[in-house]
Figure: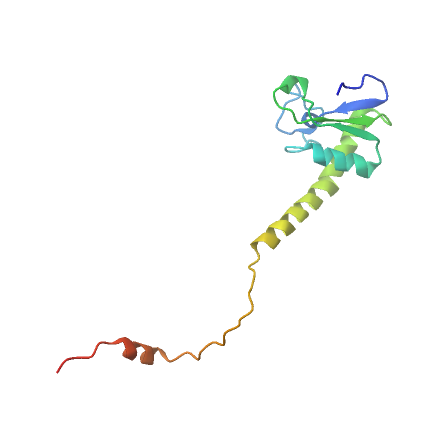
Length: 142
């Protein structure tokens, strides 16, 4: 699918938000606003929550990292690009990431919970420790 070349949308790559990249490497935000390992899903959820019209292209790659196809999101122009990126970053930090982490933790808790089976057999009364030992002691020969 060819990229849009009109003046109604911004190209927004996850690399713009990546805290691990330098400005020359593609980061567009300050380190305070940047995120660690941003994903296309987080960008999509933030754009949706802020009410932007967006379009996702999953097979696209940032030109400086052409081998790593993280995708891109086209967001309609409502404000300057830097302001839009800062809003998206703030939304991801305050709402999206905590919600995703909470959901991930709930799923892990469900998986780790032990499944209990109903107890069908009645448990025998435990004999005192001394009686058990005597039962298995070999008899002495006389």
